[in-house]
Length: 175
Image 1 (cartoon, rainbow, N blue to C red):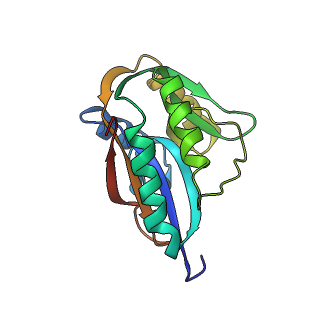
Image 2 (cartoon, helix red, strand yellow):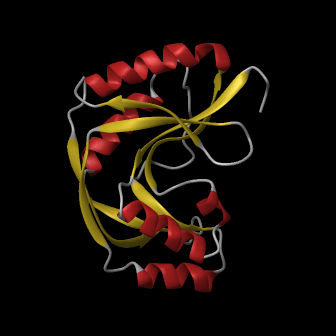
C-alpha cells in the first residue's frame, strides 16, 4: 500500500450474539481472517483511496447514509461461491435489495473508484480459502442458522496492512 493511500472498507456489523457465533465458527474452520475480520455484510470490499480524499469520502458516506432508511436483515442458511472461489457464507433472506442499493451508491462515490471482481452479492463469509472438508463442515453446521436484526447504520473501516480492520466511523441511516 502506498504511503499516500489508505485501505478502507464499508460494512454492516452482525450484532451479538450472532456476530460472535459466526466469527467463532469461521475461526474453527481454520480461516485466518476470522482473527482480523468480525462477522459482517460487506458494502465495499477492501479499497485503496487517496489519504487526502478520505474526508470527502466520509462526507459522501454521510450523504448516502442519510438518503437510505433503516431496514431489517434476516440471515438464514448457507451458500457457497464454489467452484468460482472457495467461500462458504450465511445467506441473506431479507435486506438484499437495501444492501445492493447501499453498495452501489458507495462504490460510485467520488474518490472510491472500485472495480468489482465479481457482481455484488450480500452475504456473511463464514469460511474462505480453507480445505474442502472444512468448507463442507461449515456449510452443514450453519445450514439451519437463522437470525433477524435491524440495521440502523453502516461502518467505515480502515486497515493499515497488519492486524485487524479498525472501525473508523459509523454512519446512521436516514440522517
